[in-house]
Image 1: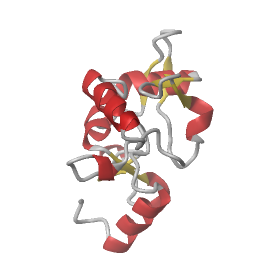
Image 2: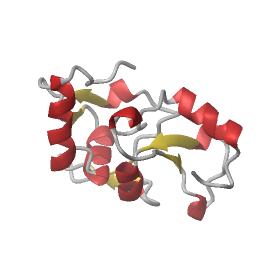
Image 3: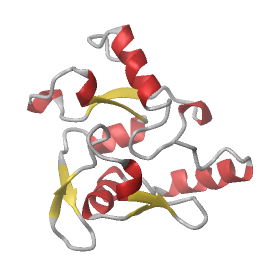
Image 4: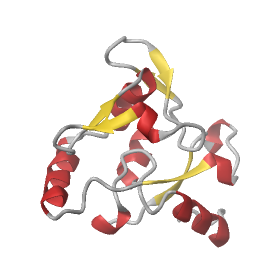
Length: 141
């Protein structure tokens, strides 16, 4: 956890995002990692440490996002802002594939975010298939 974020603020973020990654919706309880409190608008670019600018992110999404705020939509080849977990509804930009092992982009923002954060990386798709067999995926939110 980031030491400059109060314990209470971290708790609020975890509760708000139900211990799921705000981007790929992986459940922290199904992983062997501790999820991170992420600045949606990065501190390096002037983002503040306030509830509305913080989300819970798995280490993989957080590393791929880094300080990005935009990405290229692979369909249109145009640049779009990344999904903002506080300002936008996940289900408006993303859905699960028929098998629920991949995230599909419904909008330019969704597709750009999936590509930039590598939300369907091979290892994650494989582990989602195992979680499906265990009836632990997809998450209800």
